[in-house]
Length: 351
Ligand SMILES: [Zn+2]
Image 1 (cartoon, protein in one colour):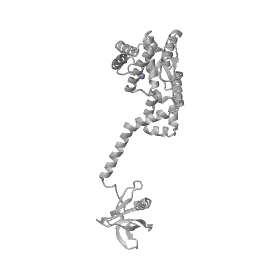
Image 2 (cartoon, helix red, strand yellow):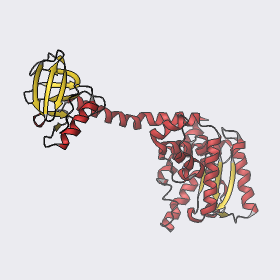
Image 3 (cartoon, rainbow, N blue to C red):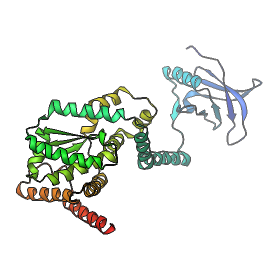
Image 4 (cartoon, rainbow, N blue to C red):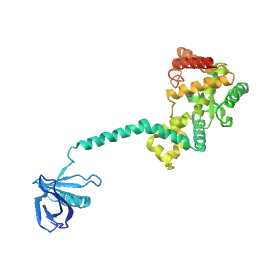
């Protein structure tokens, strides 16, 4: 059996002692010798009676001999080689995980808390940072991709009459002129909704899409529809979809994104807009957009509670036909109507 007499440098701790001496370990077959610097034999043992700790990063390897003395070395590669050689023979090493250690447990707990911390506190902060550093071209690319995808898969050209469209366009012009953003950013698009049915939604670049089905749903109440459009303008102004998108990307993705390292996966999501389609707003975001609608409608000289009429209509249609899927995407409708009413009252008494 080929033996490797190459000594491994390390430190030797005699049994039950904190004192240590520089030493080297020499393995010949299954026999181990620990030698002092002057070559004197400190102790010896056999592989089968010696335990060795597993390799963990650059942590020192610890060999405990049968007599209780310990040899420690930073030379992980040499120990691995020794272990590999011994594995071939009959005399196996005894592997032992590092002894149960309170400090190790504490470290694990801290690591878990750190990860929870990232999601609780650092993720919202990273999202805000990402929104702040996002160049305007990104929401444009995302929006274009999303609309193209929907046009290819779901939407059809609008079948609304020119009169229906121009009434909504006029109102939309008044609303966007009073928004907090450059009014040139906003654009109203009409589509037949197909699978998505009666709906309106905003893309992060300021494109607002309203479906024919929603216009029909409102039964001639243009102001109600404007209340919904004002709500969508609110989502754009408050950058909700960008926030939700970054939230879905997660902390690791955001760090890459902010660092400028946009992976190909991220690029796909940005360009195809698939990421946007799967998103839904949080309840808090919906409530913010509702209040935004109340304010914007009041500024434009419309009924501030028009969005509330939309919720009333949703509730009555729910009674007629519980199969309407528009409610599934708009949870908590009665609560939202009540909140809209209270906020409108509050604004009125403040003026
Ligand atoms: Zn909304």
